[in-house]
Image (cartoon, rainbow, N blue to C red; front, side, top):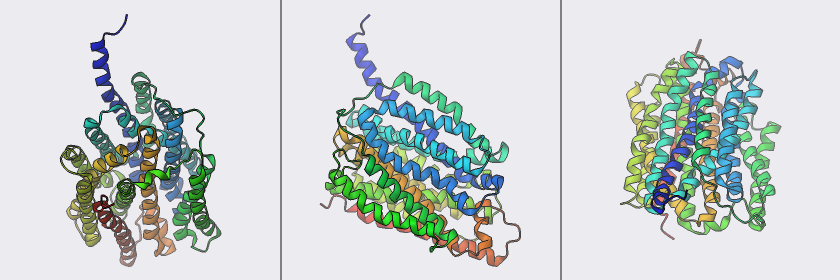
Length: 480
């Protein structure tokens, strides 16, 4: 029996929302998992009795691999199909989450986190591209606003869920809880997603470019994260920074002459597109480490449990949750230039408040106000900025465009976390470095608390510089 034309039209009209439901579930799962560990990190650190540098790599290993492969998988998706790779990514992510809970030591945990990052990169790379392919332009801003809303919800629930699971059931359930939802998402995706068109088969994957960007970013994060712990003259730190300095220009040269480049530099000829991507990086740099820093600070200085600290970082994601749908509506009336600039300015004010008030003697409400403003700024920024990026490239380059967007966002996240933790620990005496990650405060003197608070203040000050710079870039995005 053939489907009537009316039924076919109705099905086609409903299909974009089915895609959005599928990608929303995948995004919720992946981003929720990231947020849960941010708060549960001290519990994991205490369980494995690990050192400061290994503790930081529990977070950074995922972020680094996810950042690099988001760019690589953006190109792969354009060639092999977004639907197929999205489902593969969700399968890998779910399986890795289940296995991480059985990790016998921190080395195995970090290895499995790397595997999980590969699956997460496949999911995140294809999410926005699938939405952009499916929705008509008049509804795209609304759809992307909902997508940001889902991401905000994941960030809202992540610290609370992670803190509760780690406190009540143990750190393993922080990961095991993802498995059933991952299976549901996979089955729903198999049912809803259509196969997407791919580019010509003769186009190849840029393996040389992938290797050089892997070495460049890996070297940078290794150097930044290990420098404050091992010392800036340590051979590993020097090697990491040297790899970044040498591989970055080599990557640019390779991409300019590659037949099927990993990063299409021709997309950056349009200044508004370039400005949107730069401010995307700065926005994520400003926001990402705030949750980690506040969770660690509240557990360390205010003697909060992981669950209590998770509750206290809620205002940042609550602000994003409130502003994301509002931003989607406002994109119909106001330009991305105005909305994104105001969003970055709001985040700047929120960070400034925290820089000013951070102290063991200051009550929580002032922190909450600062965190709420940071979240509102991020929610107002993301939707119009993402719309600018995704609609300014041809459809057959949306995989690459979304890969670059996601990669720069993740690059902002990983450098934010690495630099912030480095700033916090760089000036601390050796006996305080490990305490930052374990949350153990027994025997701390007033002098120790002063050192720790100063380190956190400097870290927030560094984060504050990003939206300050981003405001000017965003405002002048239409200048050329």
